[in-house]
Length: 174
Ligand code: IMP
Image 1 (cartoon, rainbow, N blue to C red):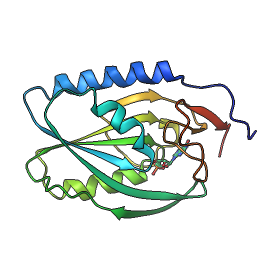
Image 2 (image 1 turned 60 degrees about the vertical axis):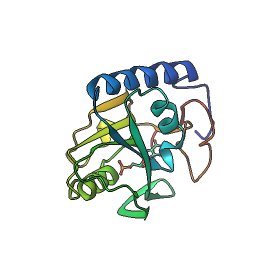
Image 3 (image 1 turned 45 degrees about the vertical axis):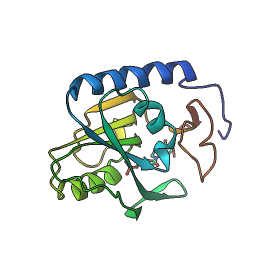
Image 4 (image 1 turned 90 degrees about the horizontal axis):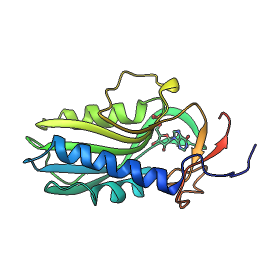
């Protein structure tokens, strides 16, 4: 099936959940400053949506990573652009679009952990637990989803559909 059907997660569901997550993060980090790291390109919609509702002081940074070639995982992680902040002793939160096998985030997590942040948390918009290959502790999850290939709200298929404001199921399986 190659049709972009009706939303699997609507704009309203997404925005409500994003506000809930932001409020939880604001409570957990009350009185602290954070470094919010958006993992591109996938989190390019989720990241600005959530940070604008988090009300603790923060610095914003970005990391550009990719592990997928034509939607097949290769296991090879490429970091195209690293963060610029020195995160030693800082409270860092990573914002990701989706955790699938977990290989991408595990690599990024370990890389950043070696720079000795005071804390390092993970916030993902979507979690496809059924496909996990590595052990990864995720602190904030927008939605748990079944094993479907989804597009929209930053997520792509071969570079397309990232601009959809909602999440749609693209294929039943990859
Ligand atoms: P992982 O390393 O297998 O966890 O893959 C994570 C990355 O794969 C995400 O950041 C996405 O870019 C991509 N990805 C995984 N599942 C999907 C999906 O259902 N739709 C679009 N991209 C996906």
